[in-house]
Length: 491
Image 1 (cartoon, rainbow, N blue to C red):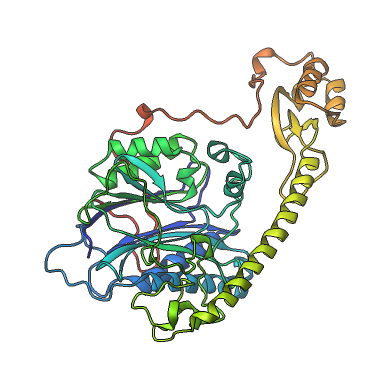
Image 2 (image 1 turned 60 degrees about the vertical axis):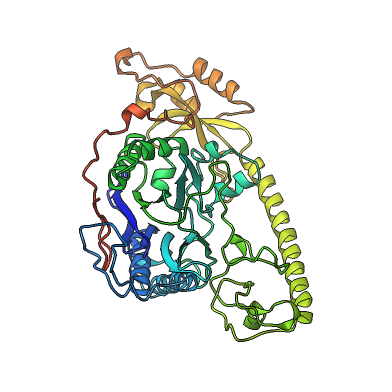
């Protein structure tokens, strides 16, 4: 098996009392799952997902609790290496198990989990390759030639906004709806799973993480920490968790760092990463699925998945779906245009429906987010909200744009009545000016008791921690134990 070295760390963060993340780092199989759902059900969902992958994909030999975290020792017999289809099937099974559990137990209703996985698998071209899979907004990065690149694609509301050019990648990190995912395990009985293969390249460093890291640290800061701890993946994992906590730690934080010690020679540093599936034949004109087209469930017509030009069986066919197929079945090439044409029509219909929905949502959101009003927030502080009061449209609720320096108990009666009237304004400047002139402290209020708040929107991003704030020595990692798996390991 590929020679790897890894480290892993997890922490509940600064604002959560329970860690609903689970991780797995053992024997060429690395998983991060970020649970969601009330009554700690998210912890149950992420644990089910990790346990399923461990049961289905752990190699037949090898000790998960071996303190030496380096694979590939000469003479080590590693049989039963899984393939990409097996990884996808295991994630699909985990999805069904979580869904069934939520249906059977009312306390687990609505629970789900993201998942991202990296596994060493058998490969039709090389002996081994990496299989990558993800559902949700937990991420996989790879660092090569000192360049960090996100390998996975987030299934989230803000990622769709970024893809449409509505917001920038940096703005997505502070967007109030950044935690809304568009895909997760356990929500529906079937789920679409992004999956593909990558070559095993000597010197590559992979990072698997929950959004507790990526929401707190920009990619540049992640790269700085990885460079600082270039030779010790456990220290890098610990330092990333600590840096995310120093930056706010608003969510559970889980990180797995995997170093490739032996593999293919790295490509020219000037070349872009090649993330195309390795099973694609570039000389084949047949349609090749993109990441978004890969489906965990088998197609309605599985025979078409192995069709090749001329009606002959290819020794390495280009699959139309990333699911299990019968390699001995072929379909005449004359049957292919009809199937592709139908898929293209369905694609156009889907695009049309999506465009109408997006346009309607955009209009509704623009209306719901227009205007400003003054009111007390839940802490009885005077704030200016953006949006229409007493109005909720889908996920677009009024948001705090400015906080004044006074709370309710510091104001005189006229000022309290003014704020409780929730006056509305067309612009933020007009609302702020009105607060400055109409909201006055009572005679009993001492200026020393007043806490100044900056005259700036509350959505102003927090300061990014400087490299100096990054710990110079790894902190003792918190651990989360999943069923049958050791989830935090040392170098």
